[in-house]
Each structure stands twice: as structure tokens, then as C-alpha cells.
Image 1 (tube, rainbow, N blue to C red):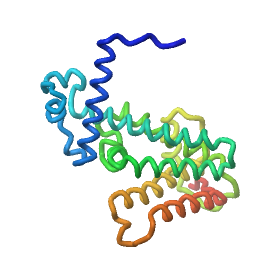
Image 2: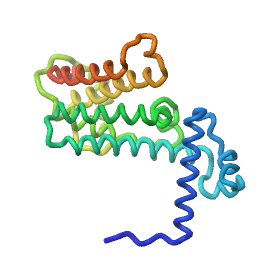
Image 3: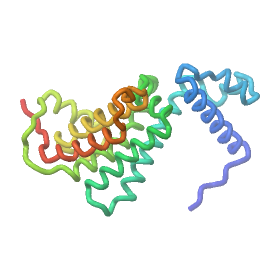
Image 4: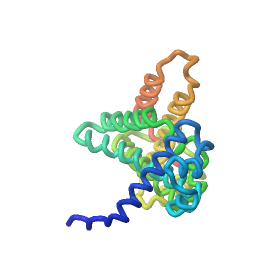
Length: 234
């Protein structure tokens, strides 16, 4: 059943909110998060500052919306890559999804920085809304790592870390996974994030090494390590 058509007033509000967000992202792309100014946006749109506050309660409220949408867009990208490669072996799906992650970051560095290189991306302003938004992209990674996960127990993770990994995962409401898969999920994110962060901030330039090659090498190393899963140990 199709959704009911929006009224003219609802369409106008939707379009205005969309324009505010677009202008906010442009400001962030040009000058970083500190450049975001509701007053400047209102001026650009020919509105009074008071009128703009009818759409967002505060600057922080707008930032929260931008962070959530960044996480959602990244998750959409990763889920689409997983779906497009669903008939391929797990290793090929993992490459496709991690490639999607990198391409999203390179194409939208200001949104990547907002989500992953700022304190607001961690949920500081509104953890009840932001933290759930972070979980979809991680769920894609965890599903693929579970599919890749083979081999015996050769590495260990301390029981204290094991307990925190399980508590972290329970908060997502997702089906239970082994501590080994959860640890690999965190390791995957931190390692790939590390390469991307250095690339986006220009820190790898001095090496003269292609960051894409470093990133792919990390992806391959992570898959190789799946033959040596980690388990908890007191």
C-alpha cells in the first residue's frame, strides 16, 4: 500500500529541512565542524534565525541529525555491497563490503570525519539516537566475519575483554556471536579506520605508498587471520 501523499505544508517543511542539512554539510566540508553556523545558514536561505529554529532546536540538534544520516548512508552503502555480492564466496563479499566502506569515506571525507573523527560521532550529544545508528554497518562486518570464521583456537583474549565484547554486542539486540567474531569485528574496524584516517588527513603522503594498497593488504591480512580465531581466557 502506497504512503499517503504529503500536504503542501509537509512538502515545504521536508524540502526546507533538506536544504538546511545540505548547507550545513557544505559548511563542514569547507571549514570543518567548527564552521557550522545556524545564523549563516539562515542568512544564506533568506530566513531569520528564529525561523530556522522552527526546524532544529539547536546547533547540536542539527549536528545529531547529520551524524545519524552519515551512519545510515554508510550502512546503506555497505549493505548494498553485501547484497550485490551475496552469491559470491564469503571472502569476495568481505572485499566488496570493505571496498564500499573505503569508497564512501574517500568520496565524502567531511561526513566520514563527522562520524569517526569527531567526538560527536561517538554519541556524545545524543547517545540514545546516535549509538543505534552506528550498529548497522558493524552488523554487516560481523555477519561476514562469522561466515569467514574457521579454524582452531590459537589466540586468546582476556576474560575481562571478552565480557565487555559480549556486553557491547548484547546492546545491539542482534543474535549472539562468538567472542572470536566480536573481537575480529572490533579489530577490523580499528585497523581499517586507522588506514583511512591517516589517508584522509594526508599522513601517508610522506611514505609515497599508495594508501589503497595498504588498505587492501589490511583487508587480506584480516581474512588470513580468520584461520586463527581468538577465544576468551581467564
